[in-house]
Length: 127
Image 1: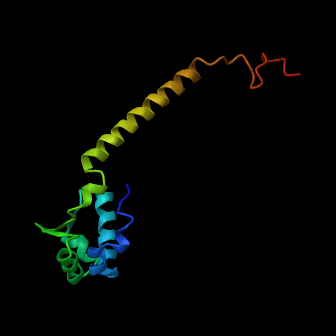
Image 2: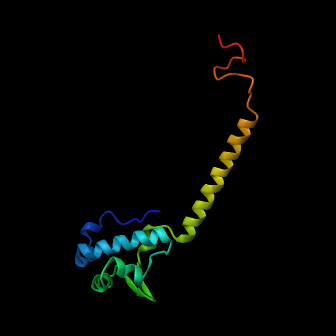
Image 3: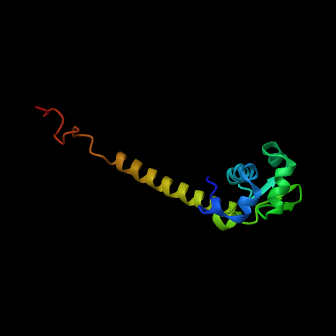
């Protein structure tokens, strides 16, 4: 899973006001959220293992995070990232597509003409 941010955020006012350290916490927590399918929610123990309470407060004060029960949320997360439900649906669709492909490949292999060599000649006529 990937965590996406706007490519213009290096010049965005909230990011500039937050500073590099707080924005680093934002990015690392965003990656954690994407990997754990939390739709932008960051539990306090995760956020505080990555950054300090002061950096979390800074992210709230500039609007990049909002206080939530037991942690924080990223209010803009779903504008640039798939929701957990979307990720699950996409992964299920991909798994089904791959299963159909494997079934077709297995079917082709089971009906393959085994009387021919790799060069297309009947066995025993490799000269």
